[in-house]
Length: 204
Image (cartoon, rainbow, N blue to C red; front, side):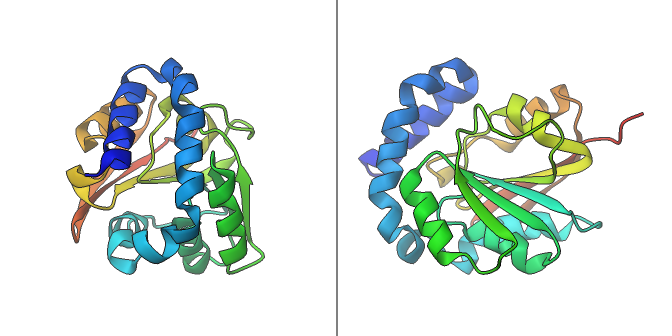
């Protein structure tokens, strides 16, 4: 890993353990991704790296009507969802204004919208989304749980598995989601990457 990637790994490890420390790292992380935004789509996104997320989405039986892609970057995973489910309203959110500008430029359908938002403090109501996606993204588990609708799914993917700069072991992801009431659906391996799908039970 280069220096930027090592920094992302350190931030991920620290913030997953102590989410309140995100306030220390939010600005430098956003600036780092702003610098990378112009080259990201050409150098970091391809079908192979999207395969773990695509595999998790394959396991969702009922098409979601509302999708949130957290840490959307240039919107690749959001566009994957929009192509797969053309009737869904797909929202991509990222803390980096530069990445959001690129995602808006690359948007493939009017069903997609992209906005600058902090995943630790999302500007969306409780239960707003039937699917929440995190592709190579630091998971803020409380917010993920809050915005996922009853009966909805959470899909978490790491394109290069444990070599992904932003990476959380799947057993940790599974445990954190289960502590918040989610039911584990399955783990997946695709290409070099790993992914996980969980479901929030219907309200009783």
